[in-house]
Image (tube, rainbow, N blue to C red; front, top):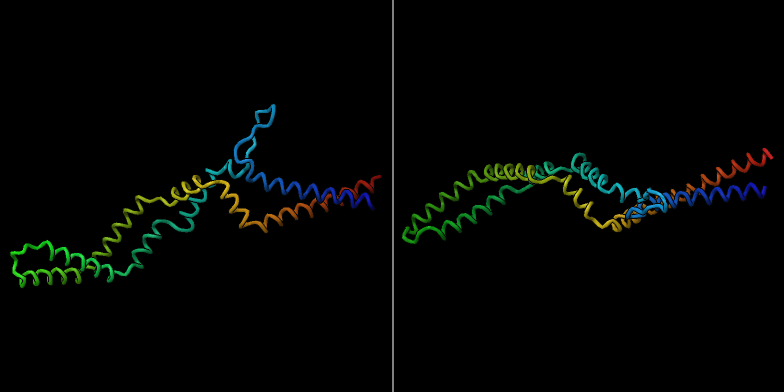
Length: 199
């Protein structure tokens, strides 16, 4: 019976250590290391595939979560067109008043400014909508969310990524280590029982 417990504990230790090493090998070594006297190089899975992972995350964010089209559409629909028209109107009236020649009588100046103000108030919201759509089309053509995310991940310090992952998934990774020990214990028990039964 003692032998069975010892074999089960050895199995638990092996299972736990295997999972601890497997988790570490996801991130380490960061740079490729050559195994002595062989052409084989080892490198952590995530640093080795960082570029592919970055591209994949960028594509998922762009295709599945949020795209520049969504952002542009939200901006156009959520912006307060009346407020934008008021801002444009105030700016145009100030500039028009300053730039009008001083020889124009103030009565005519007032009429011109009133006409300009009425035109802006009548057509302003439609113009803001059109301008917003034109700007959004230019933004959509010029901005690539996928590439931006990919570039950001690729230039991000890898040690910070590792730290972030461990901080977020600390509990889950600990469960994987413990599960390795539990499975190893069960396999050790089974092997021990088979060995003792055959002897």
